[in-house]
Length: 183
Ligand code: FEO
Image (cartoon, rainbow, N blue to C red; front, side):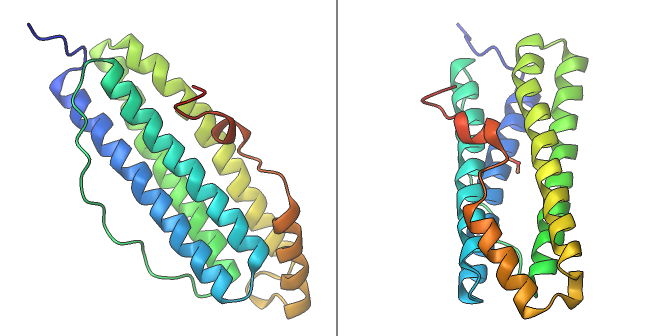
């Protein structure tokens, strides 16, 4: 008897997104290492924390697939993209990455709607809210670097920005609070 409550295309799409979240985690990890190497400890710490949130997203997909009787396929992920060239470039890359992830989440929402898979549609609403939070956070980062001078930001402005990032609370509160242990 087949107890898998996911269609084959839905299972494949959820697995792809699970692995995408893992890839995102690696990208944030890599950017965090870059920031630390550049002397930006606060930004680095922020990026490391965010990497953990992306991993939580991966686990959330993994757990959902299992709960629906599906098969999880953990696959290889590509190498993180090249290091940012500056803090400005780093924040722009973070923004683009989050927008591109939102588009993938919306595709899954549409797919679940088209299939009439309301359990998956309901599950995906958490990610719709989360992506809104993440985009807001990325926009805030872009605003902060803009105020600091953007591409022309001075060392002292970047120093101050770095200190701010080190002490700020995680804005992506939903991701921070929700893990497989606390779904
Ligand atoms: Fe899991 Fe930043 O999206």
